[in-house]
Image 1 (cartoon, rainbow, N blue to C red):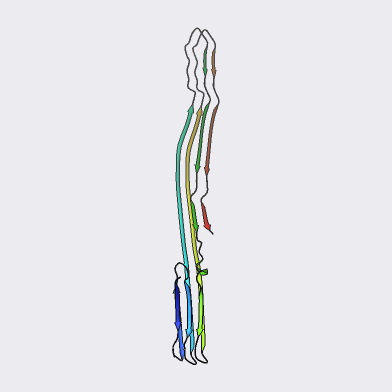
Image 2: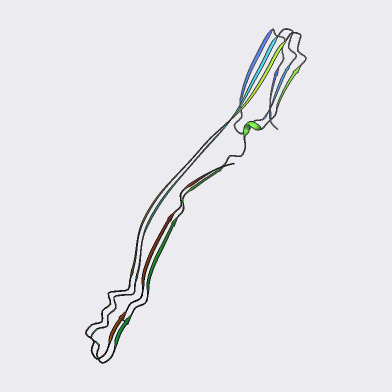
Length: 200
């Protein structure tokens, strides 16, 4: 395991050391050794470990739907018939359209808290009489997360169903009958909202 080692040891009346380290991913082990300093010396070690995680996610979805659905069993003709019955029987006319649009998704897992990684060891050893020894180790962790999601959906749909407009005219010598089936037209549009997931 990687470690940062600081040692302060000198025959000085006053000694001061200020150390600042930045660990981009996770803190390594920190070792501070204040030893072998002369009598009456002042010895100070300040260690600051900084860890910053920046996360940015952006998602943009543009959907354009333009569709026409048509069903027609009409527009039938039976004209000018003689000597018998005349009939027009149309089937059912069904037109259906389903449009499903899914929203964009951002997923991020920032699992490691870098301020919790690494060990800190401070050693004071064999310093002279009347020395003042101070060691400060500060670990700071910052997480900056940003997720942005934008969806734009435009649906233009036309659903048409027709069974009518049948013509049976000018028929003689029998019965004339026109029977049309059912006409059904359905349109369903579903748009799912975008989502952002940040864990843990």
